[in-house]
Length: 142
Image (cartoon, rainbow, N blue to C red):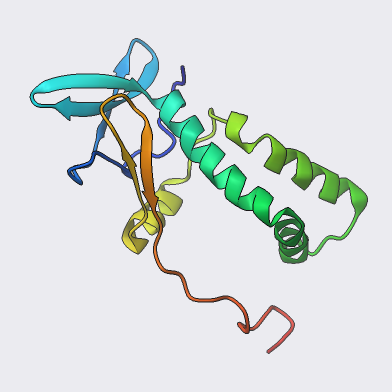
């Protein structure tokens, strides 16, 4: 159980209706309207599935992702690289950290949506078509 719903505003049902967030005690839940019956789905379970999806995608290109992050940070040392590798390996366990509201709003405006069913199972993650970053100018290229 978690005290936050990490992806608040980005979770939808199969009918493309947004799910609100509620609480059972101190635990956050996504509220799924199942023909008038309001199901309280544990936000931690749903968020963990989404984070696992992202982790799997990053792990497919782990070396390239780490190189890119090191370049963006302007660092190239073994300690930073090890820290990034650890964070990627455990990213699906970090459920107590909220996405900044600006990040959620940006994802929402780009068309990013997460679809779950009435049991809280991840059905689909719809990501926007982003432009190919190959060939875009880097910080030292202009």
